[in-house]
Length: 96
Image (cartoon, rainbow, N blue to C red; front, side, top):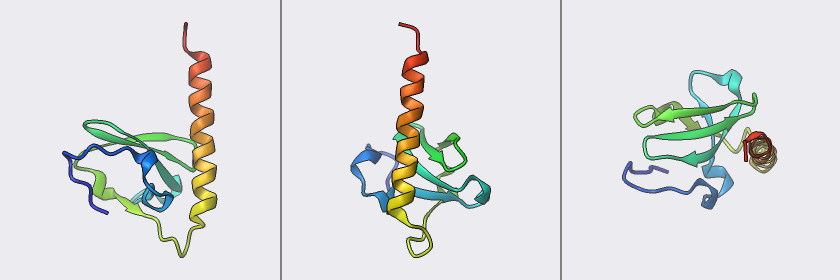
């Protein structure tokens, strides 16, 4: 899938197989779930527990996962749960 820079993408509307990526040079991060699209960057939550931002122009480093090698449904569910937990913790820690 190629997404043009002008296109507004809501990753949550995409099927799981279009939201999972690996960084071409950082395999130790594991699979990343595309969680947010911003005007100049994309944010992915990786299996190592970190959320990382990638600026436009660096998206080519994110390679779609091979669904023959990765159980897309299980990885997607795990990463989605991790992201929801992280957001809940952020909300709890935010001053009111």
